[in-house]
Image (tube, rainbow, N blue to C red; front, side, top):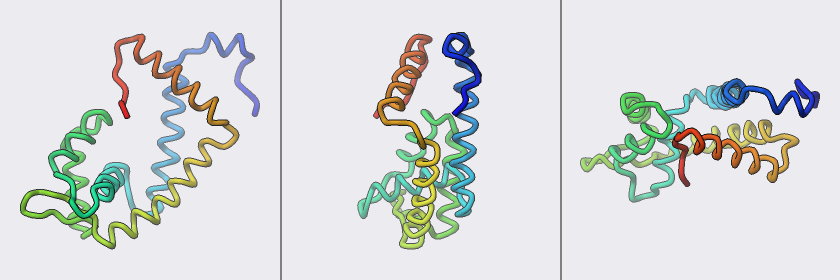
Length: 153
């Protein structure tokens, strides 16, 4: 890989530009992978929440709250994603507003997951885990340094 600058030049580069460029390139790549299965990110996130909840299901309001804030999508976008999945019979909602994935939703999620996993591998190609972890730690430190907020696992 040819880098844009030598190490001294890279050290003077604006993090805002490079973090934006990385975000744009990787998110576009992931969105393209999902689009191959007719999905966008918000429905993908909802499918994963419903799958992770198992037979018990997950409270719709909890899903909307969880996916609205840290991902900066807003509740209207997540509500629309839930409605889209309900209309497509990919999830169900009971009288207590608990969401469950249907067999069709599970099959779509599994197909899309295989493609997203391949996209993830493509993004990470040639990057050892240690370098990836170091990069994320640096980004998290920068976020902390400016009083920002990042996801917590």
